[in-house]
Image (cartoon, rainbow, N blue to C red):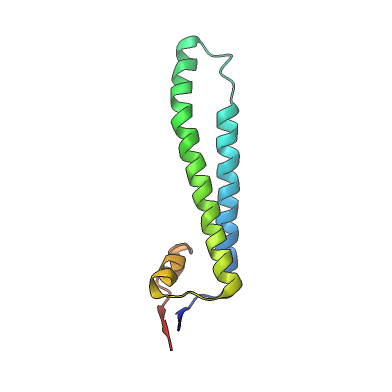
Length: 109
């Protein structure tokens, strides 16, 4: 038994690429933010920047990891073209662009 997700293969490839690019962009963002120098700021501003930077670096790292995981999820599905249940099919559909969020997911005979 399997699940049918009615989405063109090219759309899966595009979604995978977009999540991968988003992950790479976010990864670069947190690395730049983490390494940004505060040496030219006054001590008060440098302290404020450091207080801001820590939580935002952590958030960007988390988002980068999630985006790359989404890309990997689609790549894995695409390589096997098999979802084992409707819940998994719906989860993959949720990673696709909004215009595909009404793609049909149903049990296959």
